[in-house]
Amino acid sequence: MRTSRGVLWFISFSALLMVVASPASAQFTTSQTISVGTQPRGIAIDDLNGDGNLDIVVANSGSNTVSVLLGNGDGTYKPRADYAAGTGPTSVEITDINHDGKKDVVVSDYVGGTVGVLLGNGNGTLQPVKTFSVGMSPESLTVGTLDNTGTVYVVVTLLSNNTVKILKWTGSGSTAALTAVSSYAVGRLPWAVEIADLNKDGFGDIVTANTYGTNTSVLLGKGGGLFNPAVNYSFVGGGATSVALADINGDGYPDLIFPNYFGSQIITFKNNGNGTFGPVQKTPAAGSGYSIATASFQSPGVTDLIIADLNNNFIDVEFNDGNGAFHSAGHFATGTQPVYVETGDLKNNGSTDAVISNLGSNSITIWYQ
Ligand SMILES: [Ca+2]
Ligand SMILES: [Ca+2]
Ligand SMILES: [Ca+2]
Ligand SMILES: [Ca+2]
Image (cartoon, rainbow, N blue to C red; front, side, top):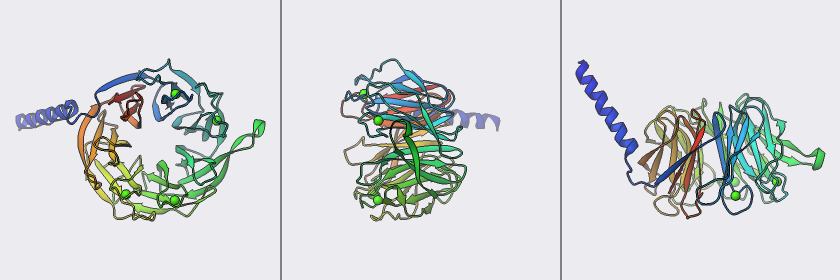
């Protein structure tokens, strides 16, 4: 009894090793690990200093900082610069929040109950953080234009009261501030939020992943930072901690994609073309997917997935059959507790790279193609 169980364990362990080590249809070829602050969470990738090379900003929830890594465009980076960023920063974005032509950094401060803004100087350095109260437990934020005015809005999720709050930059000089525009109820524990124009009416729409609600909330935009009430779509079990909005079946309309941390699945909803969604679809996936990003590995226009597996210390690359069905195409090792994945072409060679924050080892892993 004991022997056969031991053999089974050995076989399982060997199989796991093979899966982790296998190059499979290796998309990623080389990796690099860079130290950041403690307990890194969210990652933003954009050209912060306008030199044409993508840069990386990481929110360090333990050290209350953001780490800025300015890219040289060849997979090397200038020495890391850390800036105070409020208390417990979890989620971070790069955008020109005050419309002065210089990219800025915006973070959600989960412990502090604020959104922190670090205005950019245009050369990759940042001004001291200014924090603005938004309510308790702001976990995730995203930024974007929601209409044709060019105004950049911040959308932040509040776990304390299960809402999304929409804010924008107002005033100038000493009166400049991040000001609330509106607030809407969503499902329980909205752990992640993204924006896309789901129904192609020119207005940005909001989607949240509600971890305890075991559902997703879709809020169709009306412009000016205003939205229709949330429509919730049930996962039918399982709780997602991340969401990606991308077209998985080639009809041109963004669909909803979630990793199922509790259920070893990929959960998808296909867009009906008007911002309503068809029945939930689930694909088995290995492990405990916590964060999701999209990339096209097979051919342009086909959306594949990268899923950070929090408990198994790898990213899983999932290939799309073109119709929104996925199968694993390989696992690539990360540091301890990969909690977030973001993508960008960091080497300027036309292919997508993946940056992963390692919550348990205070570093990021970058996998390059
Ligand atoms: Ca740059
Ligand atoms: Ca700016
Ligand atoms: Ca829309
Ligand atoms: Ca679609």
